[in-house]
Length: 280
Image (cartoon, rainbow, N blue to C red; front, side):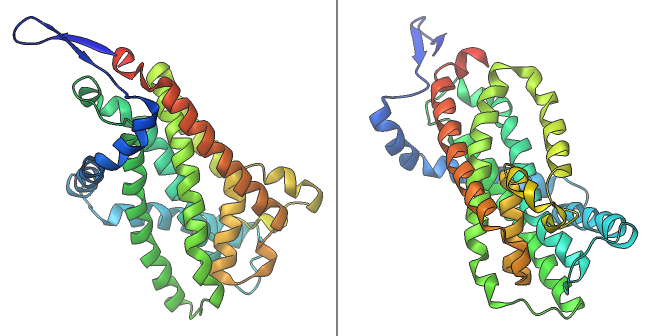
């Protein structure tokens, strides 16, 4: 809760959250603010960069090239009948979506601190809008994947129709993790220095540059404790149709962890929300 003085000298109290029974209705009432913040961030991202839209494509594309050279050409990791660049890029799509959403959400409340101390609205709108922005990046990058399929004359199987289900999964994982890290970063400002390390380390332990089939079977369930493993495996299976990419226990575990992340993220965010105006 924040206290300020108005022009007449009276105390102005800004309550950061209403009763719980009204909160979710307020999310719907403030939907226009949600779309405005998302649209504003999209314009800022693409208008104030030298290469504009190309930047959302270059990042995953250049990473794909590096991984293809290291894991495909030098380490000779198997890719089956699928061109190695497609194998890598199909993993880069969900990973880039999650990692960028996680990083952007961590600083979203700090970056909009002026709004938090002046008006009431459900604070969840701010980190949620950053995830929507990165969904736009995902869709742009997906066009590059389609171009790669034409280049390699790779015809996607019918399993590609279930790809939206895995996109929804990584979307919810990004939301849950984004809510949590946004709330933590308000209370512990030095946490922003930990986020890049978490993202970098997460990329190393996720099967982005290689297939998770190289992991020993007895360790694969433990490896799947990383929820992005199941998501990436699902993306690869949907795009390539390779059944070996799907590890059902890991996929189920990823789904369970997704639900836990959403629950914990929302619970902690709501718990801390009333203190945001004072901590900012």
